[in-house]
Image 1 (spheres, rainbow, N blue to C red):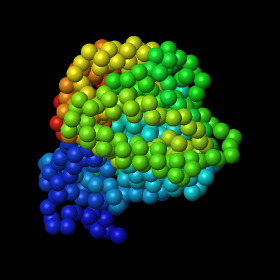
Image 2: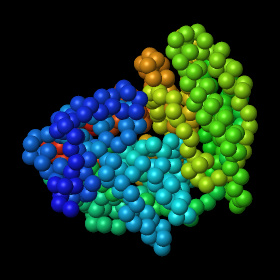
Image 3: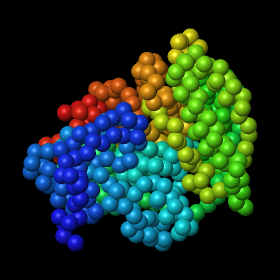
Image 4: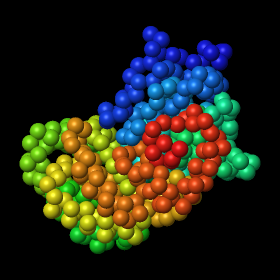
Length: 448
């Protein structure tokens, strides 16, 4: 196959409009291409740079920001997929960058392997997930990006760089930063993850009052490998989830119970409740109280991705902040007080997770034990006032916004909460001085 034959353009010669999953970001690039090989992608970058066009890669659009927006060349990943190598001795799997996490999880499970930790949805491409800092919750196990062992990157001049922590000094520097690279350093084409033999997790989910969760938060985190909870605004109710490794046997949720809980209630009924709240905001607190009282405990044991992840079919917009774990309880109490005195009507629960410190320059957990607070609003419902009020609370606690979720922070603020921010921007200056991979979002969060 020639390099040129590995590049597929839009059928009619024009680039189609691209929209993200939530529908709040739209791109109208001059060209949209779908390379099937690293070499073809590198040629796309070289040609774009020669034509004075900027280049961005967009995955499945699960970011809520304009991180992938471009008016130049948009690279779509649907032909750059699949497992490329499995090294059982080294405990690694190499996968093409456009592979959705759900396909990676299924492919790993078929080989008796698994990632150590993951987020709660798996629709994203692997490159999109790592580049924006996607994470789950874990006492000891960190984000998806922290599980990387190596990656391949097409740089602004069209050259291809393979890098890892064992490479040259420059390769180590690029690997350290590009694990959460925001698409600012190049286009990721291949990733090598550390994996382990598949294991079982027992999930224990149960309702718990807000006051108890916050009072026992440190203990709940310490006693469980993976702890998270959801607080329902307008109520004093939370739903907690504890995931811990199990010797088995597997005991998945019964098919009917799983469908009722995860499809009928969490998606179908919840969709109807959100639509009602959008049309008649005054109904939201009452529906929240009824919904929180309907929660019941459940426990099940299954392979990791079937425990960590769940289907999300109700569309929303989201903002998430990472704050020092020691600040979590105070911040949550401030958030609850905000809801009690405000006019906001919020249908979605507030999601709280944790992560250990890692060594990735722009990871939201870089250098500190972290707690995450995520807020959501039903798509099409005014969210700006609520998000801004929550953001003021989080930034007062040195919060770091999730790179793929809505926020209003700029480079000046971010340089103050990321100790290694200048290290990343200096590397960007070396690798992409002409900002081939630039856009307005990166200009705001990284500076010129």
